[in-house]
Length: 110
Image 1 (cartoon, rainbow, N blue to C red):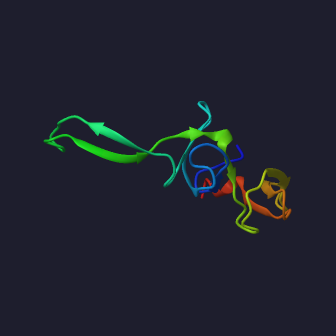
Image 2: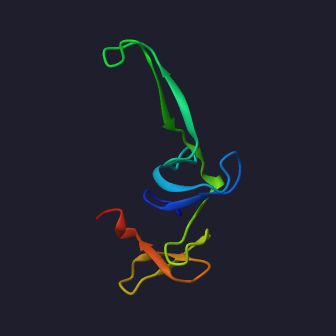
């Protein structure tokens, strides 16, 4: 997957075009991504023990994966992601603008 949890992304199209945020969750099966501070919606809750009068809370909603692009931490530009092998043989993600690697597969596991 080219977009991962913790990446900084920029929204390309739609109502929130131009906004940037950090990825909170990626759903590969549905092709959706949850970005912090982008695509906020109101959720209405019925009465419960926690909310005796009901509630109206604002939260992020998932958006299509194709509408976001990774922002390179090295050159700070929205970029496509390529792949290369590191010195230790691990697969590394590569910025297509500055040609510098910016994260390996092992980052998620540590």
